[in-house]
Every structure is written in C-alpha cells, then in structure tokens.
Length: 256
Image (cartoon, rainbow, N blue to C red; front, top):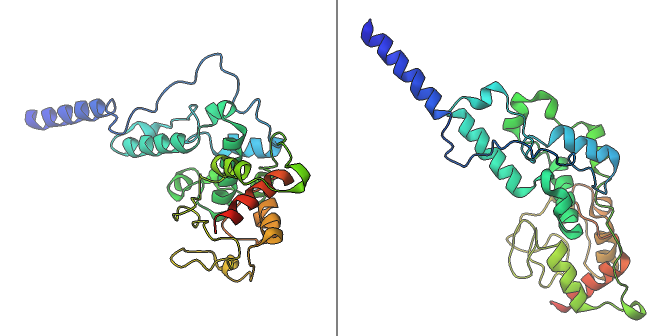
C-alpha cells in the first residue's frame, strides 16, 4: 500500500512538472497591458472583423484563451504547438504593424482557407463546436480584400513591368513563384496558357473546366476578383487598383 501511494504521489508530481515543460516553445504569454484592442485600427469591414475576433484569436493572436484541458500534458503540448504555428502564419496582435500589401495577402488567405474548410482546423472544431464558420460568417469574410490605399498609375495606360515585378513580390509571393510550384502554380508562361493546364499541379475542378485562356482581358478580370470569375477555384485574391493589375499583367506577359 505504501508503495502504491508513493507511485501515485510521484506520478502526480511528474504530471504537474510536465505542465511547466514546453517542447515546442511557450506561447502562454499574457496580452501586453495597455495595448490597443485587437484590430482596432484595421481597415476592414466591421462584420469581417467580428468574425476574426470571435473565431480566430485563440490560435492567431497573443490573447489565446486557455481552457483547463489545455493545461494537461502531453495534450497541452500539441495545443501549444498549434498556437505557435498559428501565430507564425498570422498574428492578429501585430496586424496593425504589417504593410498594406502583407495585410492584403493574409486577407486573401483567410478567404481561401475559410471557404475551403481548412480553417478553423478540424481538431479545433471538435472541442470548440461554436468555432465552425456559418454561411453568414463566410459572407462577412468575403468582404475582405477591398484594397488599402492608391497606387501610382502607369503613364499613358501602358503597363510597367518593373512596377509589376514589385507588385508581384509584395502581393503574390505568399502563394506563387515564377519558376516553382508553391501553394499556387508557377507563373512563368502563364500568359497564353489555358487555365488549369500546367502539368504536375493539382488545380481545382472548376478552374480546369473553365475553358479560360490567360490574356490581358481574362487576367484583368481574374485579378479583379478570382472567386467572382471562377467560383470554387481555391483562390481568393483581388487587386483592386486597375493600374496595379495592368503593371502585374505586363510583368507576367514578359515572363513567357
């Protein structure tokens, strides 16, 4: 009996000690006192902001809410890992510090992952039943990505490839590269190519069946609102300013 009590005591002590171990890093930082509320200065629709604050802060901000079960190892370690990864990809606590270009890239990713069902992830929804995005939530998020600020117009209505390269580097490299497949297909030779036809890339069925050939007109329409042009295409992206689209298309056309 004494041995059993000793084993139980040692096991309890070991479990308590494990709670102070953070093999993936320690994300349990307190929200910075005196800091402005999350997304207070964010230039985005109010309803979209409400969805982000209600459904995304646990993994994508420094103001994570830690339930009791999230403090019991080793399960707590997996939760901490997910929070660390979530903050690395997008941290709403630092949103106001990002460049407008980076914010637009993240807004596009938010739309894509929300509509595809990737976010919130399944393991999170299993223990947070209210985290599932409703149709109303998706409608609110669809208003994201309406652009921030103006860009310098290309003179005489002609595109500028150098300026287009700058737009590409700021706005597109989160998912695309010119010569390598990433989350999106490589874009060298995209001008004149049939949509969904690049060998070795897993396109959506909708894009493959669209019958689109990429030229000035189709790329301009696509970049204006990808989801409006081909619903379900697995890409949510908008370049609101026409001069930016023209420059970007000129740059892509140059990379044949």
